[in-house]
Image (cartoon, rainbow, N blue to C red; front, top):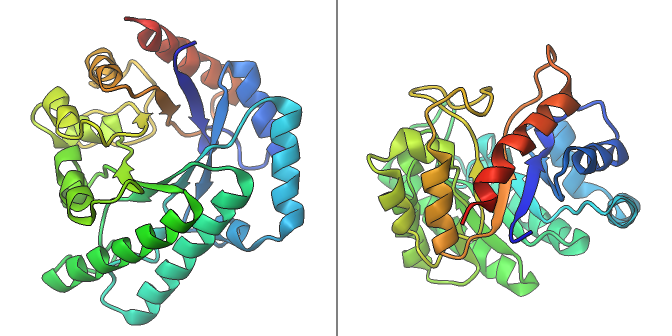
Length: 275
């Protein structure tokens, strides 16, 4: 098939082993799993695991035929790159470097960066934007050493909720190792014209999250129950040569996770096959 469709790790119960996660993805039809490095200690500790963990994941990819080629790095929500506090910025850069080194070892090609300078208890300011810019530049320089692409995710807040906004930083840094990995659900809630916003990133979109949303609701929705025009978005993305996609949704304990994964795949596959 002329596309790659992966699934977000959090679509599955956290209690599953990595072999069970990769096998479940294969059974549902997906060819990749996007690993989550979120703000929890448990997920962040993955970046500090030794070679045994890395080799285990590499072997499981060979065994199951399902790869891990993208990382959703949302740990910067807790430790933002633009924090007003130096100790937090230092920790954010430590996480960034560890994520790049981990990706290099395991075969991850793209790290999806959260598009915000600060989060939680801090307010965006000229200083936070400057810190964010400086640390993004440092991160890109480090990633280029390993050949790992960093790509902004369009978020749910005003700082970077559109591709056009993310392109301001991509243009500023001007490196092949900083691109855009948009969340089409978030773009739908943030842009006046989704297709035009996708066009603003032409030549710089390396992959796309396919997620369902509706106004002011950004997660925990089933495909087909929101207002995202996946058909138009995918059509424009494919015109630009984008063929790597990830189905982003979250496991609902009230539903059978494998059935939900199969449903998501059956919903998205025909849209990706069109044209």
